[in-house]
Length: 466
Image (cartoon, rainbow, N blue to C red; front, top):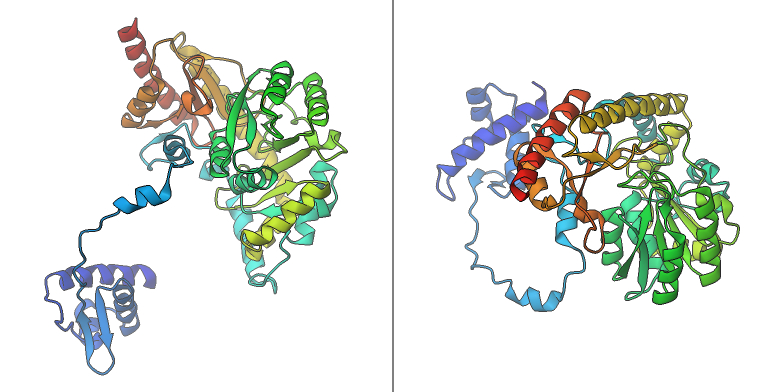
């Protein structure tokens, strides 16, 4: 057992002892405790320091360590906050499900990140070890990000390094971009169904939402044109490649139509390029930004999906005055992403291990996707796959009419399976009952068992509603 674990163990023992003592009672001295607990004086002192930090004991130099007391506090009255806060912007139902990742005993078919065994852990450790020894590790870096990292991130977008802004993760990038490009009360158009995190980001920015239906070829340009005319929106949120949750890819014809509509209406297209490296049946299409010379497209790329949830590194790519405004606004956010994270990301992206990791990741995700498709199809008609996705990490599954998807998701969680309630992926009422199943965070045996349990629950509800 290492020293930290031993100190934690002793701290817990002393905490229990302190609970049996009166406030002001003196604990035994460090030497006595060392003999009693067969631990070094340093370990005992570390344990006492933990309890002191928690306010459970107090040290008085020259006198000893005493059980601390907490002043009695009146029963809190938070009723005033309800009036002061006003109406909540962010939908707590979407926010709660988006942040839920369950426990070790749950089968994770909802998490939007990769399983630990699919992450480049050793490469990350190696790069982080190098980064922590860098002279820049704890220093202030440019607000827009390390120049070398911006240069690497710009390559996928045929952009200049000066067009790139490094931000702490894709979700933060969404909130930041929407808040900067639009004013509170403005309308943002969102393809439907869409990523719930984008809905939350728009809500957090005080924006109104209007949904535009999408199909297997992405957002429908005819309906987008109507929505732009009706709402006068100046921001459109899209996922042109491997959309979450459907896996839809914006067709070449529609890409051109979307850009033409943006130019006609003077609108920005916020391109969420989260699946840039997750094409499973071939590479994903080039970013929409590469076809837009006039600055209508603002792209967001993230590393967390293909590396690890804790590597909170994303990029915003924007040209023209909009890019300048975004870079200026970053100063008001958090000054910069920590140099240590940026150095680690830069080392990983430029290491020989990076292309090897992507190749292995795509291969293993393909195996899991195909396994999940087979299991879903085996449980038809209660589970019906809308179409096999060409990339990404999700399946969009239809369940029978009359099934309450919120209740189904709750029942699945009670049965140890986490799934996505399809209703959360629509701004308005869903046109049909869907569930989102993710194959990136579960093993193939877990996928088989999770789909089996879910199908059983769907069958029960379908029969009861028939």
